[in-house]
Length: 263
Image 1 (cartoon, helix red, strand yellow):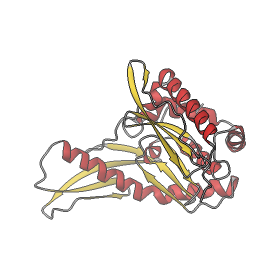
Image 2 (cartoon, rainbow, N blue to C red; image 1 turned 90 degrees about the vertical axis):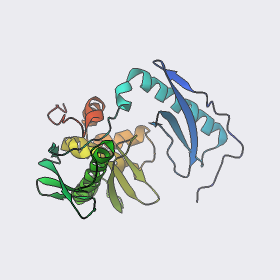
Image 3 (cartoon, rainbow, N blue to C red; image 1 turned 135 degrees about the vertical axis):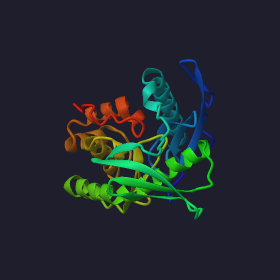
């Protein structure tokens, strides 16, 4: 249990931020972790501050993060535009180095499921299910879950490979899911890494970067100079990989930018 240093209500500026004509409400969340962060979630700026910092430091962290995300929204709005995943019958996917097609089939059983078979994702839906947005969303949800289940073991193998070669930390698991506001995260409490399922559509070098990024957080729980130095030792070209994500990441899973150069 962290020792809580915040002994009084911090004076935080929760006034909305207006950037490029769009207003964003601001939320502050105090967490049990050690890392402060700012993200855009459902059109709101969410700033997370560790409970273990003192009140004055919490106020300074909040102000700094609010300024930084406001500047990023103004200068690099593309970083915050992730198009919703959408999968449909007959769609061809290029994922983790394989070409996989989606086939939607219907049965009288009433069951709804999806499973990956070598070069195909088979989706089963009830015959009586009407055509419309609800069916489209269900197909997307079922395919997403199937991809997460099917490719988790391959990604877990890569996490272990990179960990053994570079970090040597205790990592107890990896999860894949459709994360809305970030590419990955590391939990010091569970010692698990979560990765955005959209990374399956990215070049291997980009997936490796996000894995290494989260592995380095097992040693350094912030984004300070020591953290980035550790990333640079493992991936000297990490900036090119970050640039690729910023340029192409919002379309992963929608349009395939897999041929876009990393260099």
